[in-house]
Length: 214
Image 1: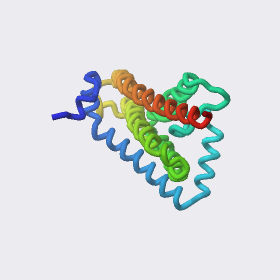
Image 2: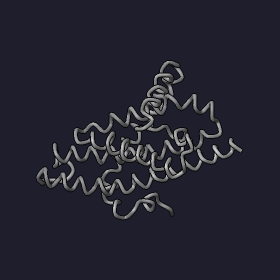
Image 3: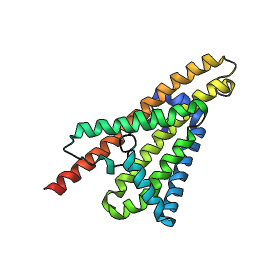
């Protein structure tokens, strides 16, 4: 019988098994934030305008799934893909989600990220009905990646504050080094997922741009 564990690379299975319950809590938190955002969007139209303004002002640093992959000003597929990888991996995942984990704060950016995505989802789904399944797929991939990025970041903080919880009776320095090793392992998966989601975004966006310019 097929088991989901077979999809997990062997080098990360031990820590994945240890962290499975915690990873689910991050995943559920992101899903709950997304749903709350959708409800806010339905009840408060002004919230939609506020978030549109936010994405307009911060488009160089954060991106909305699929829509911000649409090429502008003659951008090539590769340049747009590199931009998405920069925003998805370097800025959103590492700087905005993982690094706050040193202070055990990774959950906060996860909540804010998917709350804002949820607020814009209903109007986007109504405007781009055909794109909705792809947008939802990319959002789910980003939820999985963000959950791993957040957990690995919070483990850095735990290693410094309460090393015994994860690694037993070891020094904070030893625990922090171990947390860094595990972070690198997690990020091999995070990077793979976000590369896949970025490729999906760019492929769809460029296909549509060609379709509508023919």
